[in-house]
Length: 175
Image (cartoon, rainbow, N blue to C red; front, top):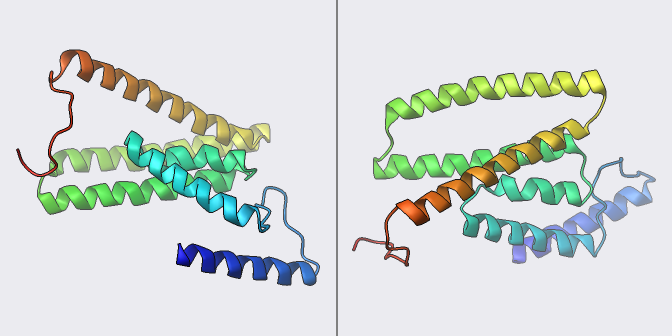
C-alpha cells in the first residue's frame, strides 16, 4: 500500500511535469489523473484476487481490464503475455522444488509452446498488417479466453459428476 501510494505520487508529478513541457498523451495511452491513479491499482488488486480465486493466470483477467480502460491492443497483449509468463514461471518453480515435474512432458509442452507462440505471433502480425485492424489482437485474446472458459467449465463439471465424491475443503498440508 505504501509503495502504491509512493508510485502514485511520483506518477502524478511526472504527468504534471510533462504537461508543463507541453507533451500530450498518445492515443491509447492511459490518462493518469488523481482519480485514475487511485482506481487502476484497485482494479489490479481485484483482478489478482479474482485470478487467484478462479485459479487462472492474471493475464486472463488483466487483458480485458486494460482493454476496457482504453489501452490499445498491442500493449495489452504484451502485458497479458508477461503476466502469464510470470505466473507460469512461479508454477514451474513450485513443481521443481517439490520434485513433481515430469521432465519428458515439460520438454514436450515447452517445445510445443515455443513453436505455437512463433506461429501464432507470425499469423496475427500478418493479419494485422493485411487488414490494418488492431482489433484482431482483441479478437484473439477474447477467443482464447472463451476457449479457456469452456474447457475449465467442462473440467469442473466432469470432476463434479465423475470425480471424487468429497467436494469439501481439504487441509493444505497432509491429511
